[in-house]
Length: 217
Image (cartoon, rainbow, N blue to C red; front, top):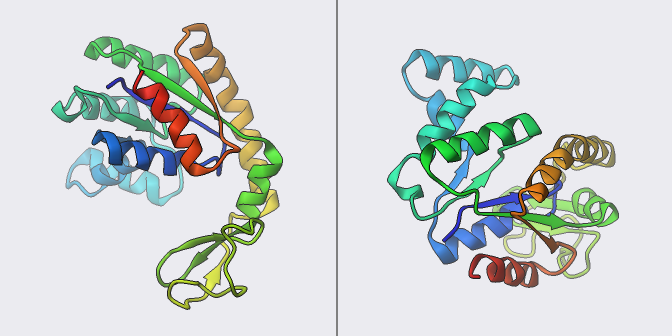
């Protein structure tokens, strides 16, 4: 199987689709966030630096992120394909990622762009509600995934809450940042003819069918 990179705006379902791919193809899901959290637990100078940087809410230096990603991708479980998540976040990182792959002898693989209109994303984020107990996720703006009783979980009867960043202002900021930072990455991979676009407005099942068809080609 080829390596996979998903590009998608916030709330487009990238994480859900990655989980479905991992479940079917049994490939590692490489998350930069997970790598950094793992390193931050180590009793080392690097571990201490990453721990303090994450705790302060700042970003880890790109040079260190590149080093950690290269070390993770060099492991045996990535030899037959993987999903990269949370990286690259800008064009500079995309160029560096290409260099890392060349150094390791890997192809870029499939870059899958999940397209979805802004209004749909807005409804998904502002309507999202999460159960305090079982973490089940609902959406009050979508009849198909809305709870039967307002603010009460169908599964366990727990109280539903809205995350602090699931509001219109936060979404607009995140979406604008996505447009500014990610569009140059999309153009970069379009020029390399490795990007495939998928309509993310469809159901989770249908979006996965399209992604699966791309992967299995």
